[in-house]
Image 1 (cartoon, rainbow, N blue to C red):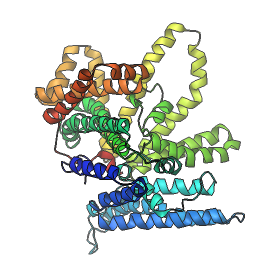
Image 2: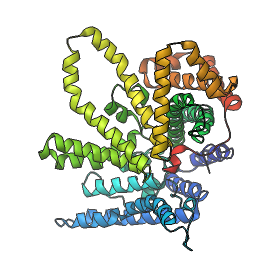
Image 3: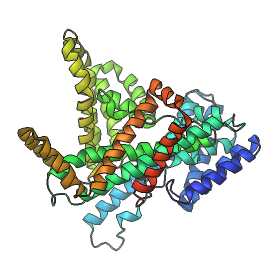
Image 4: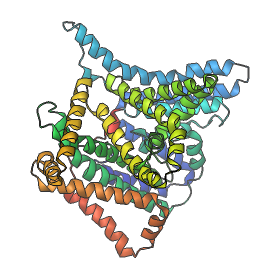
Length: 490
């Protein structure tokens, strides 16, 4: 069942009501039951897989903690991390079958690629399990002896579809304090859910109409359409994924669990390293803690070369985490190269700009724009299936940019934006502009402490007016033609 299906809000309200009627000692069990009921609405067989991985990790962690002999825990850890092999298995199965069908087209055992589906949330709960096992092995946390508490952590339903990836220590710290009805936390959760729905249904799904149309007809439409689509897909992806995160974090708050932040205005980042500290924060933090930092430490004797190897390995893993395709790998390599360039030249760039006060001001203005454009262009490789199509889109983008720079005529740019992208539909264009502007204003208010405090100091009628405005925009501007989120496929 999707978070944005029409049945989900009613069922969620009932679930929350029952939750706070229960004695606190039963709430952990209730959360586990809710999580598995939610997962069973997607797949029974994959719920069995989830349960199997959970039990394997639970027993392995206890063995790791109990075995004090030198070196042996590492052997146990290696076997327990076989749970993570399920992730690789499902990621590899599709491309392997596709290759098999291509090389043996007349085979009687030909299987359609579409039938190979990655279990819902496999990437996210596998990362939870592996991080937990490594933390137990490193003696950062104690192995959880309560199977119900541990299974609830692995399967916590707001996070299982697309994260955020919460650490075991953070979850267990909160699960032991589920007393009372935190009214302010519930109010905050409802606000986040409302904003997440706005980002998904009004912003992302409105943008999706034009983005899907452009990318489904690559080579058959006007080249300028791809100039706008590059930007609109960046905002679609951001609104879709961060909208899901807001909904997930909001639902968690309704049950007294605070999930970690996953986005912090990434499109305002002044550099690529800063972008990755603001985008999909829990994934990049997980990879930094368990892949990049250990690898960097092991390679530090190589100096700059070791740092570059660690950066590139980390970014290729991020690319391939999306799927085993050349475009995803290219996405990771591009970001790896940009990160290395940014990190290795930072000191020299700072020294160059230090004496020039006026240039420093221009640098502060230009840096976020350059970073955003680099990221938006790289997202093309996440969206289109083949390298040739990605190259075609990028060629159209730069050809259109060159034309506009030669013309320097705002009227022509506005005409292309309005007529060609929106197909002469004023409502679509207005919804896109309204949605993106509203989304960014709310992001600034959320992330800026002064603006946030001022908003909550406003009269009640003003604040509730803002909430009702978002609700009405869902009703009148929302696109109810998709019940999936982009990152569910990863």
